[in-house]
Each structure stands twice: as C-alpha cells, then as structure tokens.
Image 1 (cartoon, one colour):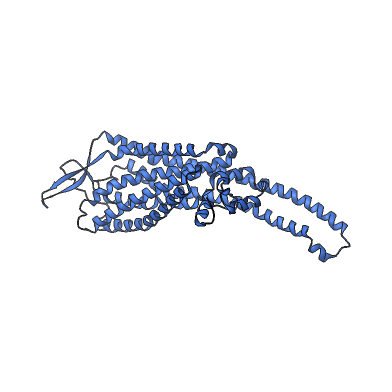
Image 2 (image 1 turned 135 degrees about the vertical axis):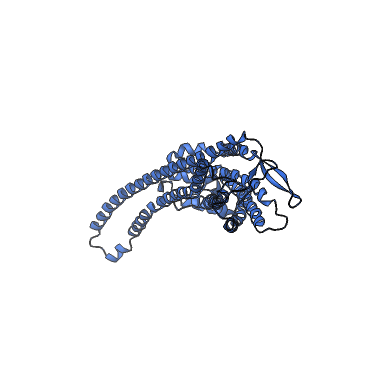
Amino acid sequence: MATNNSIEVGIQVAFPKQILSSELYPYLNSFLCILTLMFSMPAICFNAVNVFIFCKIGVTDSITVCFLHLAVCDFCTMVAQSVGAYFTLFFILNVPGSENFSTYTFATATTYSLFLDVASATITYIALQRGLCVAWPFLARHAFTRNRSLLVLITITVILVGSGMPRAVNYRFTEIPDPTSNSSQIMIVHFSDIYDHLDAFYLIFVKIFMGFTQYIIMSVCAVAIFIGMTSSMRLKSTSSSAGSDSQANQESVEKSENAEGNDKKTDENPKVINSETKKEKDKKAPQKELLVIKQALTVVLLQIFCTTPGIIVFLYSMFEPRFQIGTEYHNLFFVVFASVDVISPKIENIEFFYLPKTPPIITTSPVIWSHSEKGQKARSDFSPNEYCHSSQEFSQLINGFALQCEILRKPQMKL
C-alpha cells in the first residue's frame, strides 16, 4: 500500500530512476491490495462475531479477557488495513476524488501498525500463560487472574502505543499548491527532525527487539509444554505398565483356578472385556499429550513464519539508506512492505481460531461447567486421577472458550 513521499514544505521531490519500473509498480501494488482485501474482509466479520460472543459470555476469567482483547485488536487491525488497501486501489485506478488517497493511506498504515503490535504481544502473553500453566500449574492457577490479566494487557497497550506515537507525530499533512493544474494537493511533510531519533527507537525497540523477545518467550513456552507433556506421558506409561502387570498376575491366577472351565464363558467374562477396554484407553492416552505438543509447536512455527519477513525488512531498511521513500528503491520499498502487510496480521487470525481448540486431553473451565447440563454430565464422567496434575491445571485455566461457544450455540444450555 503506497503512501506519498516525505517532502520539505513547498518543494516536491523528484524521484530518481527506480529499480522497480513505474510500469510494473501499479500492477504489483493493485494485486497486493486485492490480496489484502481477500483476507482482511472475512477476518473483519469473524472478529466482529468473536467480540460479540465474548461480550455475550461476559469477562469472567483470565483467558476470556485475553481473547476479547485479541479479538478487538484483530478487528481494528483488519479495518485499518482494509481502508488503506481501498485508498491505494482507488488512487491507482484514478477514481474521481481519490487524488489524495495515497496520502491518507499513511494514517491508516500507522494505525494498522500500532494495533498489529498490540495483537502480536497479546498472542505472546497467551502463549506465556500456557507455558507457565504446564511448568508451574498450581502457581499459575492463582497468578493469572482476570484483574491481573486486564492490567497486563492495558500496560502492554499503553507501552506499545506510546512507543509508536513519536513515529506518527513525526509527519504532518499540508496542502501543496500545484500550478500546473491550478489546484492544491495534500502531501506529507516532516514536522521536525528531532523525531527522527524517536522513529529509529520505534523500529529498533518495537519491530526488532520486541519481535525477537516474542520468539524467545514462545519458544521457551513451547519447550515447557513439551517437557510437561512428555513427563505426563511417562507417568501414564509407568502407571499403566504397573497396572497391566498386576492385572496380568490376577488374570493368570484366575486362569489357573478356572482351567477346567468353559472357554466360551471366559470370553464373555466382563472382567476380560473391561481389561481390553482399559488397554485401548492406555494406548490412546499418549496421543492426547502429543496433540498439546503439536499445538504448541504449531503456534511457534506460525509466529516465526508470519513475523520473520517483517523483522528482516525492518533490519534491512535500517542499514540500507536507499531503501526508503524518495530514493531509487522507492517503489520497491512500498511493494515489499505491502507484501509483509499481507502476511503479518494473519498470525493473529490463524492463532485466534487455533489456540482455543480443545484437544482430548484438555478439559474445560470449571466455572463454565457448572452452568450447563453437559458440563455437569462431563464432570460426573471425568476421573481426576486419569490425567496428571499439570495437564489438569493447565486445561482448567486456559481452555474454557470452546465450550463457551458451544453453550451459546445451544439455547437450552443456561449460562
């Protein structure tokens, strides 16, 4: 999505010869705008539904606060990105009245960048909750309360928005006379060179340092989940092997006592049937932990895949002075950043629908269980000894969203 070049007041900068031809530039930019709208418009609808669902449920626990905050940030990010794509597309197509739309894209791009930073930090905070709930389940259960999570999210928002504001106030809109057309055009001008240092601070601190920090946090959390689920699998395998040995001894005693019995009666013995059912459950038990491990690793890989291109581009723009507005890399600058904008916000939308997914090992929030008939039935069928403590505490704290949505879809269930 293109914006006009920064200029000195009253003096328009003549672009040097572009490394990306001016004939190819509009086509690439139009394609990227259309691609952006294909992803962002459905995401706006989905996140609007998510916000409605969470407002209908009510902010009752930590994870609800996090997902509501993430849904609002995603919604604002997609709206800003869509508006910027429309502005750029109308400007390229020379729609009447769109002479200044390329300049207006700057305002939407700044807003989009701020909300994207907050949404990415929220994803990291949710991943941190998951990792700590596996590593220290009893401590994390009381640490992540609703009010504390709300305070953390507000602090994150204030810090990131405050870090990005100097970049926004570095520029101003002003009308520049155009004698050739006997009219004026709105352009972007530098307000003061003092803010250039703050702009560099934003790029280094938020876009680069915070990006690597998110990598580290999510990787450590994924390792914690892997270790916790692996220890759970070992505990289950040890207990199941011990139980199978004792059961095998009992079966051998029963066989010796009933050596002269009927083979048909032995096959119909309910104890034998129950033992076979238990063996099948023991075989399926490790798969539950594997689902949690795969989920955690997938989230980390998605984060790395979607945010790495942006970090590389920002690093390159810091060390290459020609990769900026008004140079021979002007067209390439906007095409590359537009490509990054197509990829970057998709991590939040993908993870929003992926994180609350409840694998078989994960139970649901006991607060929500107590409000539904299905939850009461599930509680009666659930054995606390079936899972290790870490998995149980981890699931109780983090994964209430799936059943919450199911409750809303079924009117007969009372909240």
